[in-house]
Length: 488
Image 1 (cartoon, rainbow, N blue to C red):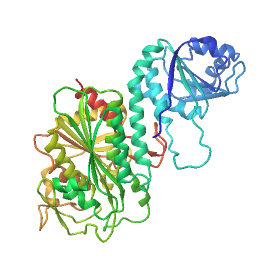
Image 2: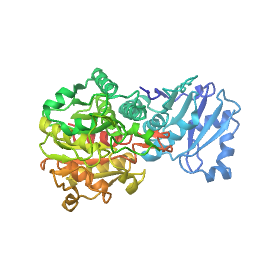
Image 3: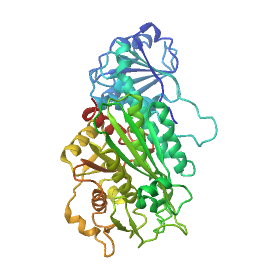
């Protein structure tokens, strides 16, 4: 997998600045005042920083912006990166400044002269997140990034606070790798193998094969994958870091490729359906993060892995399938397959683990993109308490989320003439009827959220913390939710 850059923290040593190779970063607030590290760089470069802070260009810079001084006199470094940032930035500003440093450093070594600046650990996290690149399938000389060193006061304390953030970055990278992988590489078998490998981190991992799923009665899940040569699976990952309390459950849709099945999608853009396992990718990334940081909570992550293909054995529109719960579903559209996968896994998670709460994630509906674009995931819930806690965590982490309505009136759209329900309710309120369908497989006593991440899991343009492609959205918010709400 893609590994985040290793970031070192060392105590301030002003005498080492002159000989540092690569690039050097310094921070200057809007007032133009220089800290000790910046003053040393200013002296060595014959007041280059003073000239910059007194210029109109500095006044026009926004917080977090970077000005590059190339080939500075008096330094061995190739460039000085001057970051306009308050001495006491908030978390978001600090992370965004770090992300800008990642873009500006290129493939060279970087010495970040942070001194006493607040939230140096958050700056480092932003740098790590934005350093991601997915080039596993490119030939040629793919240069590794240079070494990153933060020169800070009380380096040991900063390094300690940055430790859990390294686990978050690795979880995000794992999610991005999974979501970016092409479907001929990330088959259901390969996906399951990558999750099984996390046993070395202390996770308990169990793989349920098709025979197991048939015995359990997971017929809606199996109906999605029956047209593919790739076997359907459910992978259960358990982290038991708490006491005797019931676990919190995360459930992810893992459709490794979605053609739409017999209800075939248009050819244009179908290549993007390699990301239709994004929900399972987020669950995997969160479980990796929890294991790496040794979270003091009990969490179980379940993912349904299938491939939706058209063939002579594929499910047909009009087929009726009985779920593990026992309800029958008339399949009107085989391209509404994610909810069929989740239905059985949600029921299994409750039946087996009796979770204290449950959140499922899925790139479920195109209607969600129409409603919220690529800025926010849709949040549907039967619990104001759990939904509020998640929205708070997402807001703190800067991961856009917006609560959507639910209600019994929408259930009428799912009525079937020949079965207990249909799997689609038409174009109107498409994301809501999908959530209403899932809610039928959630017990009343289980606090539950459905996160429709169709618009945020993978994007065409770069974001503040990721290049174009998979974003890893949700790993940080869910990690924070678990830390704040469920850790002992």
